[in-house]
Image (cartoon, rainbow, N blue to C red; front, side, top):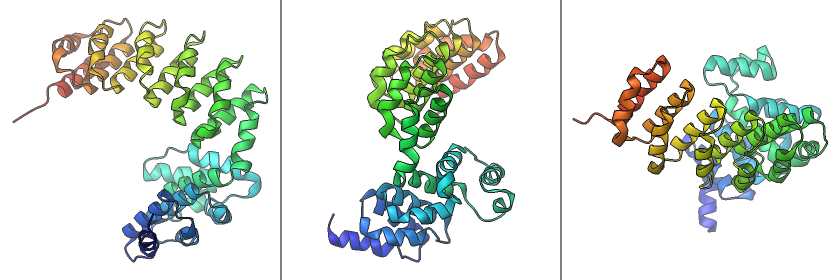
Length: 323
């Protein structure tokens, strides 16, 4: 990148406009402008939370070691509880302000929840620290995957998943062959969450697992990965003996955005399980399958109320109003 452009970005970090500061902070991380790291550290105290969030994210992308103490102070962590604190923060999925306060109270205590603390900033700082403190946070979890203790392995897989740590993919893949099905299930979940697209073939190869919970999570993981080779497995999974797996497969086919699967989904409307029929209708709606609207109309008289409601929604999506 040209020096003039870098200089412009660094200057923008000190702009009076918070939107400019935020965009500049994101640009520093995206363009790997390591010389601007000290300014990013100062922005961790910015009056605007979105600027603090952007600064933390970029410090993580830069893997700026010197920012570690400042980020740790931001999330209220010490060396001895860093890994647990990071996982706890990243595991939070609060949405409403009340949920955010409850989440912060759980992490930091009730007193802190009454202050102006923003969960997105905590999440950004925790994610950044997981990259900067890899040896302290990530590597011990990867080592646990090889420990042989099933309970600890499941916990480690969950931690790696919430941190989005794809660099541990190979160790996760090996867990797909573990003797305990709960470990295999956790490995499939983790691979889907860390967007490990390279693992799609290995996931497909493990689909014949004797436990339906594992098969279900493999389908869901492939749905998240959105690789081309997952579609044939989704079609196969529609014949699974368990409705939970068939439901996951029907949802996944709708997310492929491939109109060639519409006829297959129409056949699924005859499935004996209401949850599978409902999922097929939802997918037909996602695909805007106007050509099979008569088949959707037939489900208006389905024996299950939830299926009837989904049929109405799907029909509305397939036949949009045009004036």
